[in-house]
Image (cartoon, rainbow, N blue to C red; front, side, top):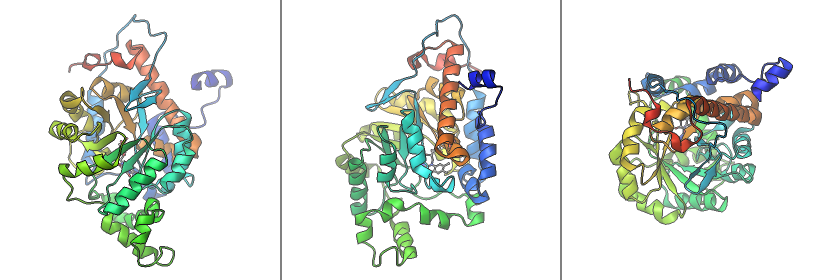
Length: 378
Ligand code: FNR
């Protein structure tokens, strides 16, 4: 459509089409603090670079004359039917990118039938994002609070609001060391806007001595004391399994033994992810650890992937190395900053178009045809 429109009108598209150009344009629209928070990572940001290097090191070997006239990008994932193997990664506090925030992203994702994984740290309550997603698929990401009653309450609310799949994030019991945010003292600001799910939670509010309208800082302090529990171990997963009757996916798995433990704990999937390089400086590129995780549990669990996906060829490479689907984070946030719901839709549609135009010219009509043989060996 973008090609055709260009042919007919001679006009360029309203937003740029490549991920780097979208980021550059979004940067112009964002505050330095917000851009630094989204773009940045842990320490010297070696992991962000490793994520991209892992993609760039791999090559695709196209095959010819294989009838790719009719292509099918659809797949089924833990009971969710997807038109393409793409989900929107959980990203907190989206109001820093655009005032329409999570509801705009939910509408754009739902319009394309793609699941938005709503973050616990969303800037609107989970019910508002659910409503905006209409008939679209709903997944909820949990930052597992210390407080048992608040945890149960969040799970109940997510279920009641129609979220089907729970994504438990394992790599952020403590926030990574992120110099860009530290230098700007940005986190205290984020904490105040990223607790909408708590300020709307009856179990959380019941634990406050004074209502948050009267003492907002006390509410933030109360939240900070329970936001996450770094003492959690594999044994604790039984609690979640007992209180969530849909699929549970563990996000942040990087080692095959951890993936096996996820399977043994009755989990349904894992996301091979290093949080977009935001948690551990000097970690391996996420794509580099994908084959070993997929090799360990790919037949038993849904293996998803994120960290560094920027275009259609990246999705093809991740699927070839064993992922069933990918999550994208920063690219859609930049789309949101550029053009609200319209900007997110644009970024997602470009990604899907580019995936189609990566599959077809390389001789693939269906996702099931992708395997390690698609990639070069050097
Ligand atoms: C994140 N991510 C994240 N993950 C999560 O489980 N809960 C969250 O609230 C957030 N918040 C968040 C904020 C911002 C600004 C970013 C960039 C990322 C991590 C996210 O889900 C995903 O793992 C990475 O973004 C994937 O890497 P790319 O696609 O951004 O390279």
